Image 1: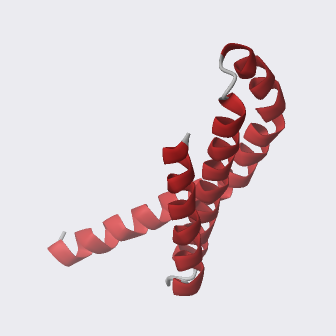
Image 2: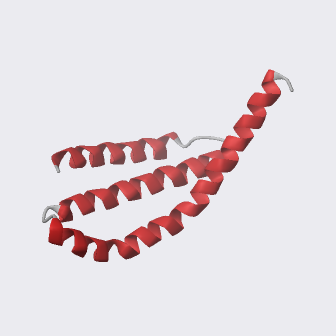
Amino acid sequence: MSFVSKIVADAKAFKAEILKIAAKTPAVLAKVTAEAPEVADLVSLVYPQAAALEATALGVADAVAAVTTSAGTAVASNGLNAVQDKGVLSAIDALIAEIKKV
């Protein structure tokens, strides 16, 4: 197998993995969102500042889902969406700033 053939095969395998992850992301996010109220109640008993942390964590989960979904879409179409990616990255930067406050 030539070097170029190996790179192409690795790129195809990487693309397949991104598409698998992108397909699973909505289901995982739905599960996390559904269980969030119960987890928040339990955690707030132990850690009163948990509400702010929970909101930030859910924001991060949403941002990760957006990144994963847009990456999967970009990979599926063999391209990148620079405008969408820039918006997602801006949202992640804002969430990081919020995490630092908590």
